[in-house]
Amino acid sequence: MSPHTPDTATTTRPAPPTRPPLTPTRPPLTPTALRTVVRELAEQPDQWIHHVRLSTEERWYRRLVAEDDHEVWLISWLPGQSTGFHDHGGSRGAFAVALGELEELSLGGPEQGLLIRRVPAGTARAFGPEYVHDVRNTASGPAVTLHAYSPPLGSMAHYDLRAGGLVRTSEEGPEQW
Image (cartoon, rainbow, N blue to C red; front, side, top):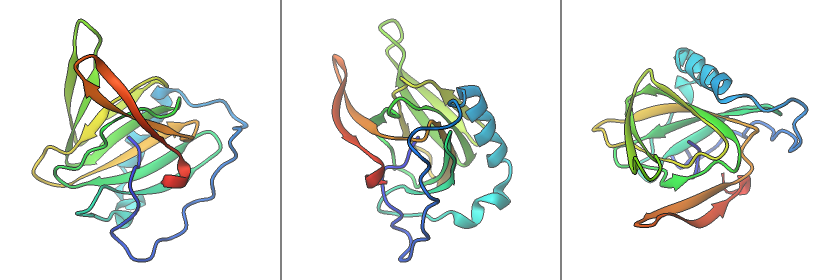
């Protein structure tokens, strides 16, 4: 998952870590390695819990790690907040639910149609560079997740789900995060 909205829960915002160069010196991490990164970090709340904010306006997020080969984001979700269908601009990714529970929607192909997965606390999901999904909080309480991307996100496209499949509607870049 990725961030889509600004940190609206605070009036002053610490400067994000310096953005890594766009040409990584190391090869991208695999989805399995990214899953390990978020799973291990989710199990260490002392490393991130003090950063968490809740926003009734939109999902809150903060970049925790910015390396040349990957980045890690912390995101909080109130009930009803979602990403909408989106890709990760060709980056591999993974996310772990540290607190609460989310729901993930993706397309499983013509034979499977729309797949809906419950993603409870303690669960981590990983995906390749072409993955498109929608993540949402359909539970009655807040959720907190950690997301890792490799290479760091350069863009994200958004999609509408229509009868014929996904239709690309917009694209955003780091300047909007």
